[in-house]
Amino acid sequence: MLLDKRIPLTYIFNKIKVDLLFVIVVGLVIHYFASTFSSILPDMPLTVAALLGTSISILLSFKMNQSYERWWEARKVWGAIVNDSRSLVLQLQSLVKDQSKVCDEISYRQIAWSYSLGNSLRGQDALLITKPWLSEADFNHIASHDNKPLALLQLHVQDLKLLRDSGKVDPYSMVQIDETIVRLTASMGMAERINNTVFPVTYRLFLHFTIYLFVIVFSIALKNIDTFYEIPLLAFVSSAFFLVEKTAYYLQDPFRNRPSDIAVTNIAQTIELNIRQLLGDREAARPVTKETFYLM
Image (cartoon, rainbow, N blue to C red; front, side):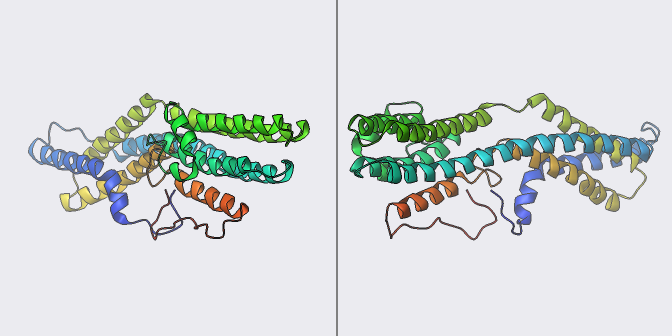
């Protein structure tokens, strides 16, 4: 997740360097044809490029809004996960009679679930960082499942059933805890839906093609300007379009392990800190914050 810090120019340049190379090549080619075959190239008024640029601006505005809505929905989902993770531990502490080892196991397992879900959404090893918080039996159990976070929630339910059968949780309290588990399951499903729903590829291809068309039309309109001025102007104007288009493209997929993604690892570290302190762990480490312009 990008922070409110100065973003390095290298990061920005790396996002559009290939597109800028295309712009420079087109500008040089058009200038060559303008000087060598001036009779072939038509006179292109700037109003045509301006009209095309306005159309691109409208399309970019729509794409940015749609992409940010997906990103913000994903952030709200992880905000709900933080709240429900805290609620689960508080409910176990307040509603379970004769606090037992099972409650601690569920609490630590919830930490593992947070890390597992984040890694799973990013296509990484869902077992990564989970072993310190799981018993050997639990770890071996989820290792055989395709959906590791779901398997962890299943272990939650099995332990809660044992608490209910032993009389340590009354039916009313069980309903409350069960509702928290249901909300965690629903949040996991919403995150998976966002991650697995592909943004229409044809829309991005059409938008990219339109920006390239604008570059060609604009370069023809500037054919009578000296190359020393034409190429920088062409690169400056087109880079604004490419930057917005790239920003929208990265925001539309918030779980791809990129600086613009939702900081699921940092959020999981916050959940770990909160739960460990609720359990009385005074040595709980605080989330790692790097001196960079983003969090992962």
